[in-house]
Image (cartoon, rainbow, N blue to C red):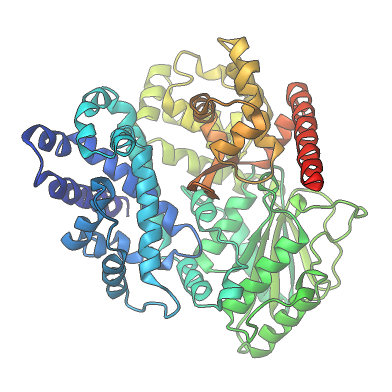
Length: 577
């Protein structure tokens, strides 16, 4: 699948640059056909395709876009894409949409492909402008500006190649996603009535990211299947400490089996019963084609409407059919004002026949239910969990930078795997952070045995490293930017981060985000100026670590006070008007 992704990007980039070069001067033609320009376009196109396919339940619509005989490789479509940087007219969205629609075996009747073409082109325009090669073109509204900048950009070939490689890998992962049951679920969502479709939270990007390089967990899947087989209904509670891979496990279930689902994501402000009920009820209506054109007001007041939907589905199932709902991170649900042990998401105490919930959570008191249930503690399966950790580590042994690191440390593959397993304390999130850092050379000047042990120590090590060599920069803009990410529980654009952090220089904010990249989740957010990249903390355990820091707490309190004063002032001004 990775080869397909690389091939489609290279094919479209070559055609794009060829069309632009046809009427160019000799000097400009040389720049347009050069390696930096083609790779910049590949990077932008890959990022745009990924953003499009993982937004708004569009996964199934994106399938022909990753086909070598799809609409993007047709010359007429490529000619329209070049209009993005010609600044003479807008691309012909209708033409692109028609070619796109023809390429789908079954095109959704409710889909306006002209509008979809415009969304995709807008993503591509945004991503092109974000590249060093094309940014001067947009600033000057003149394609000739590309000739004066590509030479300097060519000097940073290694960084550009690494960035393009990451985009290609993401697109390869996306291509495999199109062949899974999740794509079928996406098609069902797309065909739902608008009022229902609008309530469904699209988690395609989140699922693709969480399941990248997924390995093992057969012992958990087997336990789920055994519970479902042995019972007529019920809750299967998967419990474990932060970082053992509960969310990745839930995402893999959804990706491979197409289950309806909901992810609680505390660091992004997705944690309330209202959000859960809207999302899940809408998904059930769309997936099982239930006769409800919209959600009633009572849908979020308690579990009455959810139970009604589950009962309707149960009554229409064939004798051997069962329905499984996946709910991730129950412990991250908002419990404000609730007594200990209370059900924060209004989960039904009794489920209808052949309805099952698979729920992941930290090891704490689980909600009381009145039907069949079973707790499953991942930590109690140490041998199986350790085997999965080893399998994941072996995947990394084939990477050139990891091989160089092992050779430079004078250790064997077995020592690397076993030591990293011990250092991680069998925690996948630790490996998710540390292995890329080893690959980037962060620890190249340190002995292998001094790597931090355990997730908390790794966070502490990263915290200290960020404060050197310039402590003044740390307090002036690095710490305020980090604080801003803990302040707002939703993905934040760079503009929002600037507002909440008090750091006006966007270049400084980008530099901090780049340094903390491994801790961040990225997804598109809509701003007044158009779609931008939104940033939020990747894992709740890191959010909790930051929240405990005195520096963060002090900065957070000061900033909250400033924001409250500003909002009170604006409110008073409006009342006086």
